[in-house]
Length: 195
Image (tube, rainbow, N blue to C red; front, top):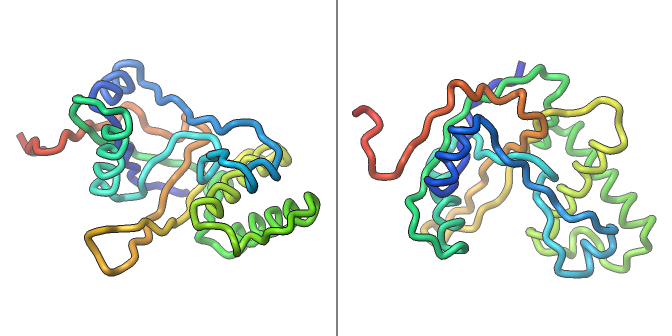
């Protein structure tokens, strides 16, 4: 059984809507051909379509929420939703695990060779490499009868505060039934959680 605490950073008004509706909205990457993903400015979610959480990392979720606030030029407060996530191991696809990582790697290699790309995966920017991983995860969802409900991978996050590189796992929930939505907690920055 895979169990963890997921942290979803967002604007407080959006957090309130999620709590009221007991439902998250899944991100959806555009439907594109692989060569358009690699060669054009198409953006793609890092682990494919789904609901994103930082694995056991409330601070990272707050940082993400601040990024969202800045991009939207919002005056809203930021908030983090703390949600228990639980699924059977057979529905957990862990790219920190060699076998799962090698499957994604083989799909990416096949995509590059079948599209005759002159550019190689290793020559792409880290962000574009992550987007290729997301594309491969969506392909796994479409190609297999066995549907994974949760994907996880550790991503390198650039930091302007640290000379050390930050690697943080991120979770993409494909099936909302793995979220223990009745146990959701809202955390607002600067508010004492023990009050």
